[in-house]
Amino acid sequence: MHIISKSAVAGLALAAATLSAGAVHAQARVAIVTPYMAQPGTQFYVEAFQEVAGEQGWDVNVIDTAGDVAAVISRIEDVVIQNVDAIVINVDPTQVTAGLQAADDAGIPVFGMDAGSDPLLVTNVTSNGYAMAAETATYVADRINGQGNVVMFVFDAFPPVQVRGVVADAVFGNHPDINVLDRVTPDVSDGGIADSRAKMEAILAANPEPGSIAAVWAAWDQPALGALQAIEAAGREGEGIVITGIDANPQAREAIGAGGNFEASVAQDFAGIGAATADAVARVLEGEDLRQSVIYVPTQLVTAANADQ
Image (cartoon, rainbow, N blue to C red):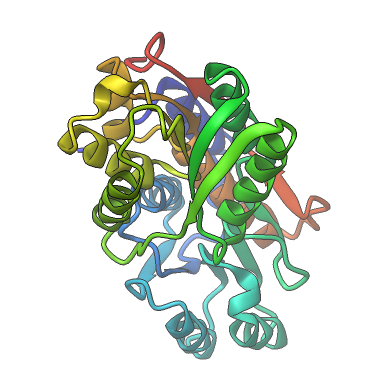
């Protein structure tokens, strides 16, 4: 059972209402291709997309390559051969150019669902990663009074996450007394929590003195949760190590609401992104020429004060 915020439901309802004027290309066939179905955010995107698509009578084929980015290319080529009406991807478009080109050659529109910008995409529907990273990195800098060692968990292989690390680096770099102790890229094949915990355990062991780590900034929630587990297992939760994430998934909200080290995250409207992507697909299938190469869906900072909302 997935928890979807009121704003997400509103976004979904809005998209459904937008489409309700009449079934758009009833029986249209749409393929969603992603290597990241293990990530909660991707699951929410897909579910919301499917709900809107179901109301329209679309046939949606969800293809998960289970962490294999290279396999996305061949899966895109497969659905191109099947002559689907539209393709949606949740992966770095620059890593699957051959597949995108095959779709373009066949005249099949491809949409990014929290993917990245690319000339071969009609549009990319996403959250503003620059704003989210600036908000959480600034939260960290303010909480530690602009000084101390910070551990960063990043993932440069995926553009929407890569830009978050770039912005956080800039925020921390603007504070001469903040030192980025380590910049960690965890293994995300199992979701990212387990490997993040293991890597954080190693960092804690290498920095045993209380106060030697002031904060953990994570580009998404799974590493933040892994770091929290490591800190608690090491008995160092009393040191005041501040943890922030991005996504505000249910597990993160629960941890934030508990009032421990995990203090803040940013809620992406995952259902809103999925629904807005379906809306973009519908508009193009109706013949509209979209002018926006990126469509941003609003976000919200989540702390203990609103974690249960």
